[in-house]
Length: 98
View 1 (cartoon, rainbow, N blue to C red):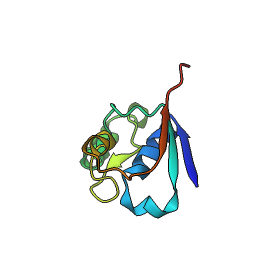
View 2 (view 1 turned 90 degrees about the vertical axis):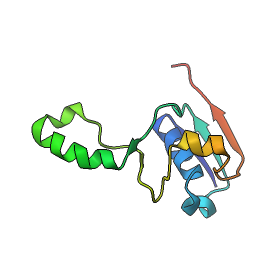
View 3 (view 1 turned 120 degrees about the horizontal axis):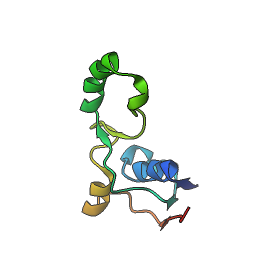
View 4 (view 1 turned 60 degrees about the vertical axis):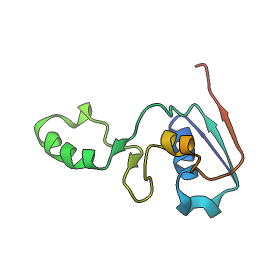
């Protein structure tokens, strides 16, 4: 199985490559336009957000998306790749211009 994702989907592929629990589910990945330099929120953010949601409109927050939870995603994916701790699988990385 080859996983492919573009933009948010590319982020998902990176998360799978950094998560040892999904190691047996695919053989290789294609990452298109993953903004690796944008850090994911830490799980603690969601506790703080709960109180902010009570005070402000939900539209100003973006509570979904990958987050460092210490269980499935131990650290930022860019750090896992940088340290060489991601799964050792063939990948293709690309970007789009539009």
